[in-house]
Length: 406
Image (cartoon, rainbow, N blue to C red; front, side, top):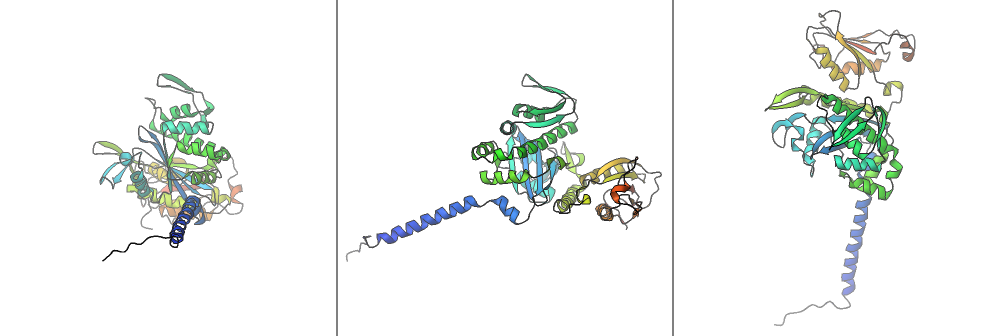
């Protein structure tokens, strides 16, 4: 029996050609759709907070790590500074260690996941760069302007670099030197402050040069110095959103904790095993998404903390907790005696809702009003002796985080 051989003739070739054209056109449409889809716009349409992980590396390890959270509708933002010596239970290696132990410059997924767990939020995007490339990015935006309170001179690779006191415009090389150098007698807080100052200056200058960064050739070059999970179009859109933020009003919050020795290493263990920072983030997210434009909505409230117990250092530790929630601590000292049984909040602000919000943070129901209520709150503080908005007198019912037994 002869086998049958099927030959595509002129009658069948148009069918095959049609199939090829169909898949070709379909592929083009899908490609265009993927190119046009913008994850930043998707977040905007879903009315979500944008959170971006920024990492500046030195020797393939984080020199500084920041998480910028921004709510585009209110244009409010906050920045969390993640210390390099922060210690926590790292799931990847199943032990307590420095958070940067899992940092890999070629794939920061594990590092990002640990910071997600630390803050209790899902980080939306990431942007990373080593010091050399961050310097090149600084040069593209024509330098970063910083106020340097006291003159600094450092030796950087046998070259003397001078930073006079006052306002300085740092080019890329000087910016890198400023954030990288470490003086032998310098306290770690000073280095942290320098890097925070640079980061805010970098964001501000980036916003000022926003229109230039929208030029395709410029944005392409700018992005070449950064590692990010955003494409060029999405990065330009993100920077455009950030240009609307009032950078001068952004509060940088350093994740705090207690230094402890763990397996021969000194680690910064977050307060209350990390629960405090999650509480702070939840509170701050509520503030970011609050559309109240009144003075109470944007005001930073001030607090005097008085230790009414015999527990040494309790007021100082409480100050660290409240600073994390964005309060400005004016004084920290002992009360008139150490026998206070119950914690009390004295409200002098005249804002009942603000006093309730403050009290809820430490679960205190004992609030006393000192404000008379006969004049406007703004007028009530117009006096020659400044008074804080709240006085917190710590009693024996305060465990360092909450008031118990209400």
